[in-house]
Amino acid sequence: MFSQVLAVTGVNLRSISQRMGSSTVAVIGIAGVVLVFLGVLSIAEGFRKAMTDVGDPQTVIVMRAGSDTEMTSGLGGDTARIIMDTPGIMRDEQGAVASSELFVIVGHPTKKDTSDANLPLRGVSPAVLKVRPAVKVVEGRMFTPGTNEIVVGRAASQQFAGLTVGSTQHWGQNTWQVVGIFDAQGSVAESEIWCDARVLQPAYRRGNSYQSVYVRLERPEGFQAFKDALTSNPQISVTPIREPDYYAAQSEVLHMIIRTIGFIIAGLMGIGAIFGAVNTMYTAVATRTREIATLRALGFGGFPVVFSVLTEAVFLAVVGGVIGGAAAWLAFDGYQTSTMNFQSFSQVAFSFAVTPALLGQALAYSVLMGVLGGIFPAVRAARLPIVTALREL
Image 1: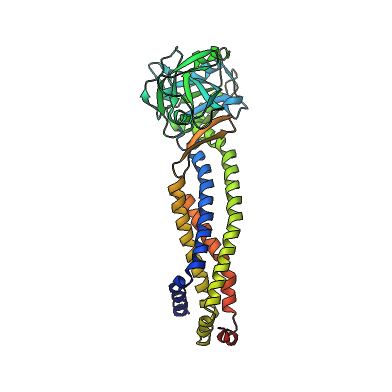
Image 2: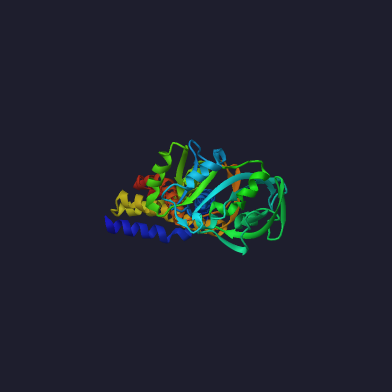
């Protein structure tokens, strides 16, 4: 049986060149499906990476109890002070390594569109770079506390018009000067603009209020003790959450929507590709009818015939999957764009990500299309009446 399978399969694969036209159609069809499949899913993966991959488990976000985003949170100045006095926070000569922060949305045109898009403007405390050690100023300098100076995330400066060092912008009741560009290792923070929270408060008439407090723990494993200390304090009503968990939760809705759309599109296109593969394999069987019948007459069983046809279909599908995957990686991986974060109603810049896991999924989908496209022609080939097939021209 094994020798029969090898013999028939080898003949099938070597004769593909004789059916180059129909085989190429099947390969291109599957490559197109894989290209679109990876293109859509790389959007979801890139957004997820921007929102979660750079989160630091040693950094904790504290918001008002019951709030799931900073936009719906509100903390008074006294509450922020109590939070920063809680045991478990890293401290240095300046005090608690914590940043009381205020988050507002401003309208600003992008480089691709003159109409305004939502741009997050975040007021932070002087210790912000200690709280977020991954953030580095890569051009210009950090803003001076107490002034109308701002620093812009690298992604925001690339997506939005006029956000260059030395430029000025008018938001709220203030005129702001850009003095630096910062890098946050591709995280969502790169889509923001930072300024002094104490200056931002009067610009938007927020009084002595904040929306969150970012704290740096003494050690990552101290989160539970810190959380228990906060939630047991009767003076405040707050919810602490690790930074990676917070941004992972924010990315879930959009990530799910995009993946669902991607699978629906790929499924619909995959049906067309399967029909193309079916047609290709029926053509292959038709052109080799007498050859298959001769093999059967010589004693070859039905299973080697079925296996050989399926192998050819899967081989063509894998070739299409590899071509589509390579094209998607070259076309989409690293491509920068932005989308709306529905949790904060602001633009988030990110890069498409064609990851090895996505490529593996696409290749598996190609194999599935090949199997479904080859199964019916393979069964037909095995069931061909030998006498009738030998009479066919």
